[in-house]
Length: 254
Ligand code: NDP
Ligand code: 8X3
Image 1 (cartoon, rainbow, N blue to C red):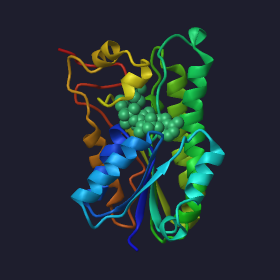
Image 2 (image 1 turned 90 degrees about the vertical axis):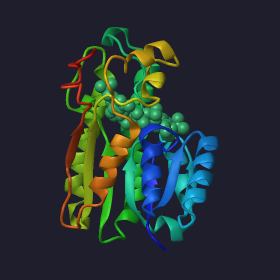
Image 3 (image 1 turned 120 degrees about the horizontal axis):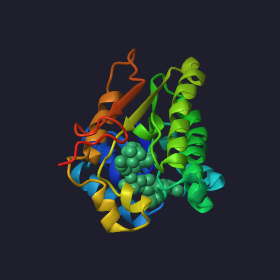
């Protein structure tokens, strides 16, 4: 059986775009997320467009370790044993404001999703990656993992943790020939800001006004590029910004 990419957060934004681009190359997919209706819709669409591919749905919350482990155990081993790419993409920001006014539930959601969820999924999937001579993990970090900015405190800390985990994984997995790539996008117009601002569409929309932000396909392009380098080449770290954004906070707006 041809190999599979396991993609977290495939119900929206980067993860969905990555799934679409992989499918177009003929790669088999395991698409994951909490919103099962969206996963089913994407699976049906991709299998219609690319009848040769195998698309498997795995519906779980990355924050719950036994749910992650059970969901992955429930996938037939002839599929899991063929996973050679893991895209750790699921993640979110919740709120933006001074640290002393932070809400502990927001902090928990970010730490549990962006750090612990990435760890739970990686721990469950790495045994399958080790079976392959050439396997690859791509962690979606952020410019917020390279810099900190006003009110970004805990989100920035979680993305700095992703950046550190990418470097640490690369060392730990070196004996197994598993590539680890870290991708750090700047502002991209996905559902990210709607989630961050808890459904406040006006505030979310304002984040992307006055300049041209990245779109999900820009990041999917980069993931496909990183995953298609020759076996002896690893792209360790890629920072991808809108041309109008020079740093986390320096934006040339109209
Ligand atoms: P979206 O909100 O569009 O997508 C986020 C995805 O993460 C969804 O598919 C969502 O699925 C999934 N997800 C969130 N929480 C969980 C959970 N507990 N369990 C399982 N899946 C979960 O945002 P983006 O596509 O923009 O974000 C993708 C990644 O990129 C995130 O890690 C984000 O931090 C990072 N990033 C985003 C940037 C941006 O400006 N957009 C810039 C830099 C990095 P569901 O809700 O169905 O579970
Ligand atoms: C998302 C980009 O700059 O809002 O990670 O933190 S930013």
